[in-house]
Image (cartoon, rainbow, N blue to C red):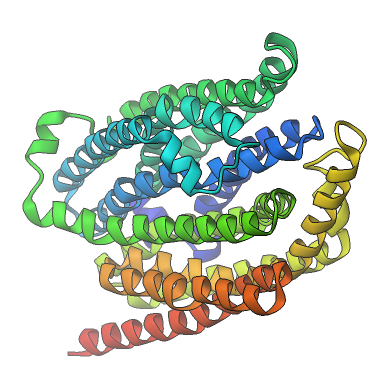
Length: 462
């Protein structure tokens, strides 16, 4: 079926399944290739290498934030313009988003290249982890941000135009390639002690391959979809449409950026205890991304359907889509709590060998990780509510609500609870800050969404 029929007429479970399943698969494979570096580095049994990858995760997440600025901002607008029957404006908006993402990627690479060491020290790098962190960041961030950011932005634009499968193939293919290249560069081509550098090279090459495929898929889709890479169309984008891209993209980027800030705070507080607490928390932040990846996939699959029906005026279909996606995400979240509570220890050991390298420090690190995972996994359902609500408001173009939620969630609740609970209960309190902070954020998120939906119902009755 064509994309208008899929978004506007197909049964909602079928439409959500069609859009969300490829996205979930892509998210999981993308997650695997982000985690595979940590997995293979963990085979060395070196806790300091693991701590270094935890530090650089913050910089990698900034790539995601910058991709969301134009990918989600532009993609949401493309879906709404499709719903209102304005394909030419959608082409202009997509071209503007593509070149905007490229410019932001180049600026980020330049800034990180100029200030790499000070940034790494700020993020918690110690004398034992600095060389590893610098090696990884130089290749993946300074040299590799352009293909990474552009590939994610292109995937968002494709998905919101109805090409979820193509977007997923690009990101998934890069992930699969990274799984193959990681052990090759880490344990075969580079000498012992250069495992972090090998992981970085494999990641950069995989991101580049994914980017090249997505450029091809984007150009092919643009023959029939309201997508374009024509720089002339980018320059012709109306001022109101540029504003619309930023009104959704900036809050989305800020949301991810504030998550990044929260991760920085976690790293700094954990590093103040010791490097092993930092390494243990780093393992957990990778493991717990599994339910997050599934739930974000549901939300990203939901977004274009909500945006299309919001713009076309079919509020009943829009609200049913929101409700169906919410039920699916909560079910998965509760299942993940059960699994992590039972298998916290073996899940943590996947990322750090206790039989290679310094076994004593590895055992301590795994012990921290298992404890932190059992505490933090409780946050999974309320984290989903936060993601789900944010994506709903982005789909409806409610940038102010998205931005307000982002600031309150991270700066009013989560980050203050980190310092408060860590001060009272130590590293366990630091782990407990996530479910407490996210729970408060979820209550506020539901209030914002329900208020906005009530306002929209009132307007539609006039």
